[in-house]
Length: 561
Image (cartoon, rainbow, N blue to C red; front, side, top):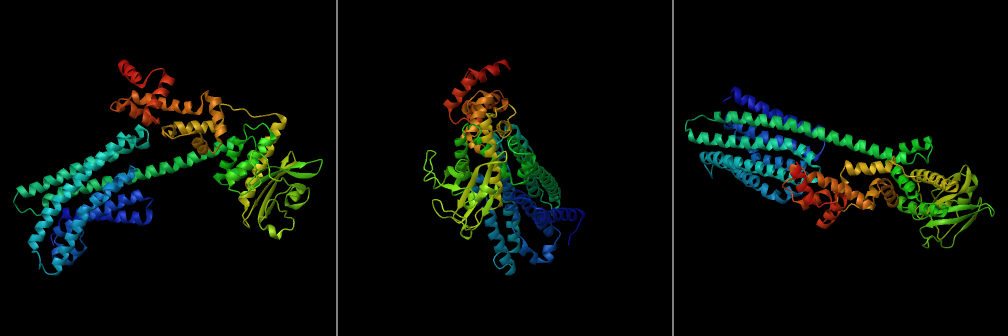
């Protein structure tokens, strides 16, 4: 065997990358994208190991090793491509060409299989010299060509992604793709170096063995190490940043919603909300904002029952109000089978204090959660018989106002989560009713937490760039009612929702119209990038907010600059 310092160093370095990649795949893998990175590193370096084993003569001594050889030189560039498109979130583009990209590997896989059969048959079909010629000529020449083509194609894909901004602000896209473009430029240079090495071995007829390839393999190993570790570090930083941002945004949103409720609940109650699921605060925020513009007790009760049905996925919901003169509980609002439309109840039920589950809750001022109504003799059938019931008292300054009640056809349907939410909703209802009675309605100020979050979504996440963005969509994102969001925007910005969103879009367009990086963009393309869904909508909004057309604005700015 022909061992030397160069072959030993190359073999050791390639094997080390393979081992590190396998360990990371088995024990430290985080997502599918980095999976592609590790597999690329493994297969690319297996190619080098295969060549070195031939160079040092192990294959001549142990021909059976050739049975483990596969044309990974045609598969590694494909994995590199998959990693790139995964990183750019453009896997849809890759999938359109994936079968074509795998053709070289499939063809040479079959060819390698035939070679192995030929070896086992003691070269019955092709001589050893012919096989070596095919391996060195066809294999290598096509491999370098294939790698070069894919490198150029990937670089082009990155440029297209940048031109389209890839759903991200321009500066972020440039920062995201800068390092990757450098990788592909280096790959193109290496492929040219590879081609030059092949040409050199053809021109210089002297028998140098694989010595001329040592600088090439060293260069590729340096490339693999730099790419592999820099990419791993970059992806880890990106992943960590995403986790931090996701946690921060969730906390900010959570704090905004809690702040929006701090005039309703006590500190102890807020602490319980914060310790519960994030969903709880979202639901309560919606209830609170939905009640904001209600000025009549009747409207409050109907809004609460309607929201209980829609937000908690209940079958029915009823609010009973205490009639002090009759000492009975009368159904005042209901959604479900009891709802007749236009705030009317079908056959409203009256329950005496202390009678039934609702009456017991009213008398004792304590909640009741009945998992099996058939086993409870107090159960009173209303419009139809159901299997479980949850009732919570509504107390205003310690005095009974009424009972929030819900029934369900499924036994054991209600749980601690329902109870917790009902208790908080009852508290919210009582607070709102108390505000109405005392005429102490809350006003909207610039410090409004929901408005701050709304502006943050526009400024940080650029949601205005979504052409289909609507008042209802944004309200759902904020977990507040659309009516309340409309009031916020009208009060604090002196614009309606549509004009306010268009203002952000116009500012975005103004920036791009005067930015040299977008000088090749058409005016319509800039408008569409900003979130407008048509040329007329863009021009009308731009003229409304600036007094001139986008064309005039671009010409005027470039003239003065």
